[in-house]
Length: 119
Image (cartoon, rainbow, N blue to C red; front, side, top):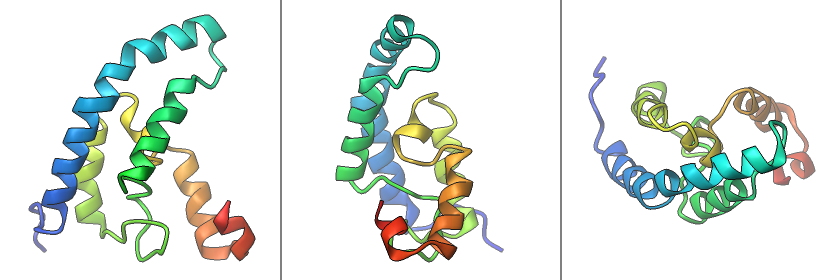
């Protein structure tokens, strides 16, 4: 089994690096300010902005294998992405790859109705 970075993932990693450098890192201070102002359980607006930009760029749902709604990566390919996302506290949530949501989305993708999947 080859555990190296595949040719398929190399451009994704470059796109993710660009997104993190251009959007995620600059948003960290804003996120902290919004959490401070809104309390621990608030939904900081900057996170929704990051999610919208990630989705627009196609940097979304990397964890879903063989899916119309995900990147269709195998576990090795996703591991390289997850390693990068793990270095930046906001990146996994911004790209819709954060627990516990990923497990819930896997269940919906496999067993949900079309209406549920669209939401």
